[in-house]
Image (cartoon, rainbow, N blue to C red; front, side, top):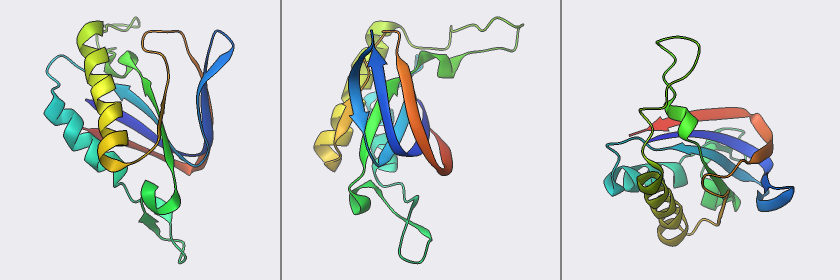
Length: 146
């Protein structure tokens, strides 16, 4: 499982010109799932993500987590995070999980972040063509993997 986490001032995702997910301060997360991922991977990364301390405290040190700043999550399923470009210029996506499995783990991961860690989660629409816009704060971009 691979996450690309961007600290944002705001972010939104549109499908067919309609906003389906929107947050102010928090993380916009691209979430990629591969064949051997499990709920245990989701559990580990949900804990890591929700407790990631990259918001500035009163001393301008990255020391605060989402809950500390009232932050939210916008989590977007992103199979292209498992693109393999080693064989040429056209990416292969054989390392990405099949849609049924990926969607099940994506939903589990989103539910875990919201229900166990109390962070509001907004989502895109799995498998849809999405337009994501964000204002990266910092910029801060971190990759988490399990």
